[in-house]
Amino acid sequence: MQIDKYFKDLDIALLKLNGADLPYLSLEKDNFYEYEKGGNVCLAGYPFGKRTAYDCTYAEGKISSTRIDCELECVNLDISGKCGNSGGAVIDMKTGNVIGVFVGSITEGEKFVEEINFMRPIKYFWKRFVN
Image 1: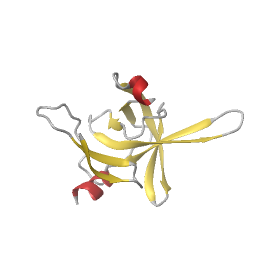
Image 2: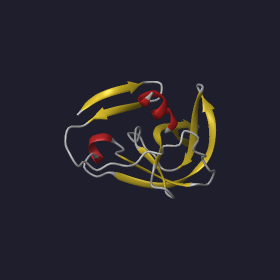
Image 3: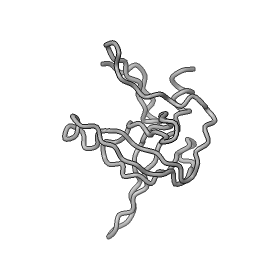
Image 4: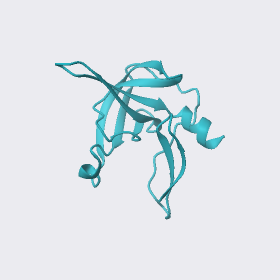
């Protein structure tokens, strides 16, 4: 495995794998995909690094809202993403397609920590990696 391309501002890398007949997820192909508030999504990934490296975790949630962050669109998720989930696939439950890449969380609070999880839309993959 090797990193083919990487964009730090997106926190997205394209990996090149050696092998044949490897399993994969389909990417949403529509650059104008409409993120529906309340839409059902799931997150697949490996939180906490090596401790979960042998068992992909799966969390279900909903699209909460969209917002702009550092001139790049973010989609807020009501989902239990954890440290290490960054780079994980966010999948539309209706289509089964990857609609985004989990980027991380924003936490605030002193006594009670509030967490906002978000993803970058898959359109950034198409714009940066394919063009």
